[in-house]
Amino acid sequence: MDKKESVNQTRLLIGIAFIIAGIIMIIIAFHTPKVSTGTVTVSLSVTETTEKETTTLPDYPLDINKATAEELMTIGGLGEHKSKLIVAYREKIGGYTSLNQLTEINGINDNVLKRIAPYLTV
Image 1 (cartoon, helix red, strand yellow):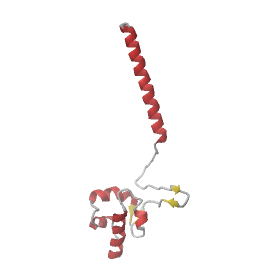
Image 2 (cartoon, helix red, strand yellow):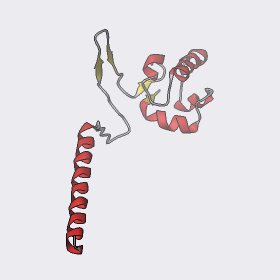
Image 3 (cartoon, one colour):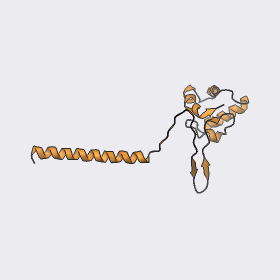
Image 4 (cartoon, helix red, strand yellow):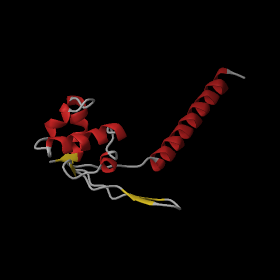
């Protein structure tokens, strides 16, 4: 095999590699869910259906003076424990007057509050 044939084979293999990479990127793009948010308020109306139950996600933002622990758990960054603490503290103080009061709960600092604040209201 001379040098010219070797260069042509190399170019052909590189071209095939680019085509395969492009096909993989297209497949990933079509299988990746798309989320579009133009404002801080996010409204989700997703219903997940199984044979036994139907679960509907709540509308955001959630009022922290009315939300149940189960509704609060739908917010990323709030697990079962923190959600129950939010509800328990609400009952203890008689209701929230500011989202900043959430930082009085063990495990919710300023960084956590910044992440969850767009999904909450008073």
